[in-house]
Amino acid sequence: MRRTKIIATVGPSSNKFDKILEMAVKGADSFRINFSHGTLEEKEEIIRSIREVSRKIGRMIPVMADLQGPVIRILTEDVVDIRKGKKYRVDYVGGGIWIPSEAFFKGVEPGDVLIVDDGRLLFRVDEAHRDHIYMKALIDGTLYSNKKVLIKDKEIIDAPLTEKDIRDLEFSLRHNVEYIALSMVRTGNDIKILREKIEEFGGDPWILAKIENPSGVENISGIADEADGVIVARGDLGQYYPLERIPSLQQSITYEGNRKGKITIIATQILESMRENESPTRAEVTDVFKSVEERVDAIMLTGETAIGRYPVKVVEWASKILEEADTRFNEETIFYNRDFEETLFDKFARGTIYMSHLLEGKIIGYTKRGNTARRLARYRPKRMVYMVTLDETVASKISLLYGVKAIYEETDEGYHEILERALSKLKKEGVVKKGDIIIFTVGVRPESTDMLRIEIV
Image (cartoon, helix red, strand yellow):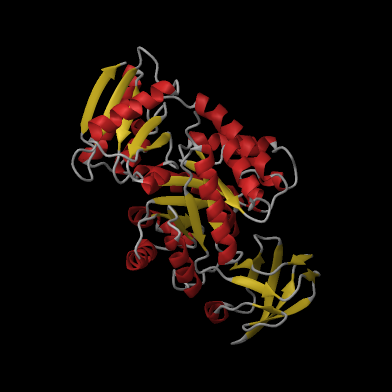
């Protein structure tokens, strides 16, 4: 089974039940909902469809709510045809073209270059006033409403959570999403603020920090300490850094995430050409293949599945490439070349993975809150690890972890009995065969991973 997971973004091209079902069947392990676009009513229907798909195919599928964060967006009443050299007025309040961000108008200055829609449009600011600016188009193009705006070589500082984010967060927690992703994370304190708000509303999703600006890159260590995972948002990083630096930035971010035992995800422009084409370029195939070598937990498809013409084929191609890559990167666990920060229980998990490699055995584990699953996944097992849990939400969460297959059990008869039931189930499915070596592991004490038992079937 494929160990590196796939996250597919649901959007206008893929937000119907049948499309979500097809993507899940073809290999999507998780679905992302982008809260920068659409209504809450639309998102409620998407979540309902994902849950129904999960039940239909009998597989745990986590939902990721991607909050907009302090992202500056440009709004328009209608689509605007942009012509190079022409000057355009942008206001603070609605009408024509506007940017409803006080922080933007405080920070923008004459001479600044505005990067709009991931660089599809560029403008130079000629005049900057308290409530409006005049900007001159540097290239031809089309301006659509609600596109992201960046100021070249400048970060606009704003609160990590907007009023919209707080409303969207409350909605997400009410619908029990398993993951919350926060955009434009600058420091670990941004994650602390989000976690405090989650505790206030009541909920326990895992938090993913999107690293997409220089502050996030510089403070990656502190961010990784506070978050449950990190996402390399390559599209936005490419607006702040020379493109030739993006591969090394990606490596340094995923390295830090792996080093601290956090979920690592690579996002944006994974199979970008498939927005319009039925097959990827050779360069894109190589890019996805190499992501497995970097030992990420997952890749995230964004526009390819949200607004592209072939969302199902994109997932199918991503799955094929990752499966091939998984067969090639089977060397010993990555702890040999990683300067990991380890607790005693991390070392126990590392020993368990090493034992499974040495004995060529299958691991069946029990996890209550997902910590044992996370510890085992961080050491990138060669074979799938089968983790049993009595918590359906935890089962969905751990389904995104590298090399982890979740088994949800409803009846608590003690962990020995739970593990034996899981073993019987895997025998019936043909996953476990006579003569196989099974390594059972469980955290007997809270927050621990400290029991190991070996058995020959």
